[in-house]
Image (cartoon, rainbow, N blue to C red; front, side, top):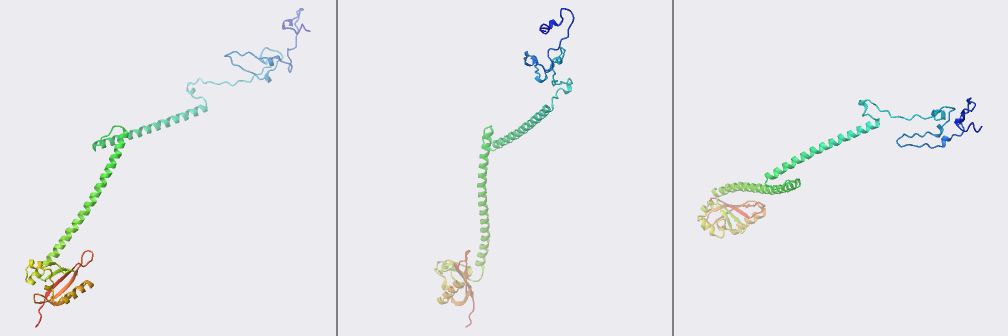
Amino acid sequence: MSSVFSSPRSAVPRGGRARLFPPRAMPGAYNSLMHTRSKHEPGVPYFHAPSSALRMAPSSSSPSAYGLTTTPTPQATISTNPSSASILTPSNSSHGSNSSGAKRSREDLNQKEKQRMLKLNDRISQLKKLLDDAGVQTKKNKQSILDNTSQYIETLRGDLAIAQQKADQAEKQTETLRQTQKRGKTDHVISDTFQKTTTPRVVLDMDMKTVVFNTAFVNFTGLSELALKRKKTLRPFLCTDTATFERMMKNVRETRQSTSAVVRTAVGSHVVLVAAVVTDDDGNVPNVEFCLIPIEMEE
């Protein structure tokens, strides 16, 4: 028996009659291939079948004859259609779409930034021209142009404030001059009326000093204007009775109302003496005006 199973060469005995031998390994028996490592050559795809797939078949030289059952390996299918060569997988196409959108977004931002810089450069060029027209010397770089523009604006604001102050002062002076002219015209009219009236009129201060008198009073006294101005007081030409005159002055000061009395003057005639206060702009009473109205006394 040992000679029969020793080698495949002894499959035909010397008698010449072929014999049938049982398979080398029965299903479920020990298989030495399960513990044999195959040599892997570089560059050759290596496929390692699981141990559960190693089975021995009854007879055959094919892999299935030795119990080798293989699982089909997934193969990548490469399309030969040129139109579909760029389409790989859904994930790749989505990534390509996102990349293309990001590229367009960057291009749009770059274009907007370029337009903004062009507008900025144009405006700075305009500022440079304005500074040149105003006689302000500046360098051509942007920082110098902006600095000089800011300083020039501050200078203009200062000049404008000074001009506004001068305009306000001129307006006040104009208004004052207008009021003065108006007052001057009024005063001129009053002065003409005071001088041209036919009633003798005299203005005295509270110390009985002469302020002014009109032409009718000069004619009433019979003296010259120069002689009247030299006199310290004109009270005798108004009233010879000192008590009556002082009583009239007191009444005028206290009541600020006009008062009158029939008195005798230094000229020798009787007159109706009318006294009235003259107030200033503040309402004070600096002067008193006297009017002399001649009357005829019956004997």
